[in-house]
Length: 143
Image 1 (spheres, rainbow, N blue to C red):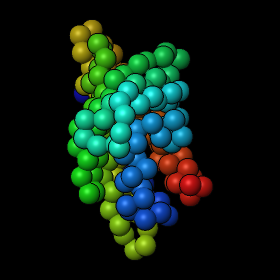
Image 2: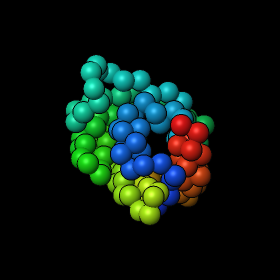
Image 3: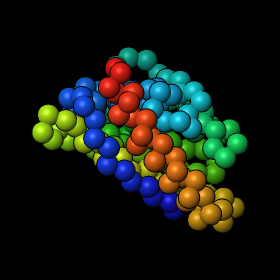
């Protein structure tokens, strides 16, 4: 399993940040690996909402079916799956001194033969997490 974590400070109110991040379709703007992210159900975003996320990682296109597992006042948990990996994005949002701190943790649990490659992929996932930490504040500042 690979876990990457980042603490990201943004200049937006915590409630706005949480609502923005709750719509996983917005990953297209803040996750540099995401190519598309399409909502698979209707209505307001809530626990159980689903998206099809298509990402490019190390030159390969990957499709994951994501669902919002937890939607709390200060925390979101998304779980994405395909035949080779289960990805969990755990996002905490805290107000601090007129700003918001986003605590972002991504965990990747590889399945089958992909488990062998997992440890070798850590540096690439760390770089991707760095890019998210750089991009998210700019996206939210423009919003």
